[in-house]
Image (cartoon, rainbow, N blue to C red; front, side, top):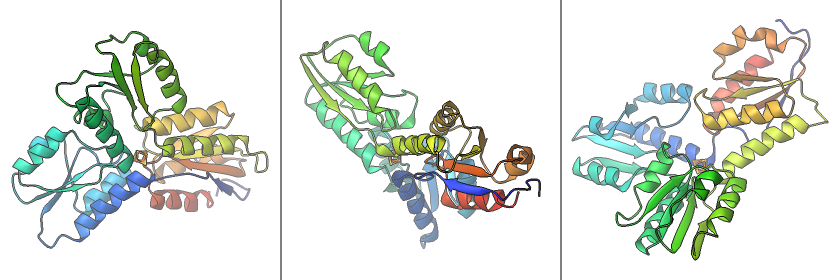
Amino acid sequence: MLNKNKINIVMADHAGFCFGVKRAVDAICEALNNNQENKEVWTIGLPIHNPQEVKRLEELGLKVANSINEIPDKNAKVLIRAHGEPLSVLDELKLKNAEVIDTTCPFVSRAQKLAADLSKQGFYIILLGDKNHPEIQGIMGHVDKNSKLEVIKDEDEAKNLKVFNSKAALISQTTQQEERLAKVAGVLVSKFRELYICNTICKATAERQEAVRALAEDSLNKLDGMVLIGGKASANTGKLRDIAAKGGLQVLWIEDAAELEANAGWFKDKVNIGIAAGASTPEWLIKEICSKIVLI
Ligand code: SF4
């Protein structure tokens, strides 16, 4: 025991799995546990941005394909991730006779459906988000082939956007900030005679960010630091780190309990420790880390 003080843990109001990720992980576990036909259970790409949870699912039997080409032509059960997939992937899976279990998050499905319907109605589809993100690629894959489509990441790209059509629909990646969507919409409104703005942003990201901000401003508990739990490759968890640091908190960002030992010095003389976690961090990992922190 390095810390002579008893550590008090203050948990962020929203931490860990969002609704869509929990739903997808539950479906994977169900497919693995309930597999009388003894099919191979696959996802295309990592099912979740959390290496510990991926490892747990792989140990239960999940197979992760890098691309659809790795899915076998028979005896495969394929779970579509919360990010969704383009229609072409779903068509290809049919040709492979795969049993498909679609766990696309309903918030993402809504964005896909809007993109499909509005593109068929002749709208120029403008997607706000990261063009390399699987969610945006999935939405792009629902846009009608005859429609004009562009992905932009911010207000500046909106200003430079070429106008092909008098009517456009602006659809957002679910994890974007509302403030950015409003700014982009403000630019586009003067470029098009008709602009359809779809607020497809889900609250989960904003709720986790707000919870970290609240921890930093918590005058009652006055935190000495915050332990942030989440995959190091997760951009959303990185954003939580930035918010906490901006709020004046010392942040220890870890992926698993094994990292606590190497960082035991960080806890020296700290009493009130906030805990936050990204939307891909499972509850079992948060519990495991909390139970070890109080023993430091
Ligand atoms: S962040 Fe929102 S849209 Fe994405 S999976 Fe979670 S609940 Fe669904």
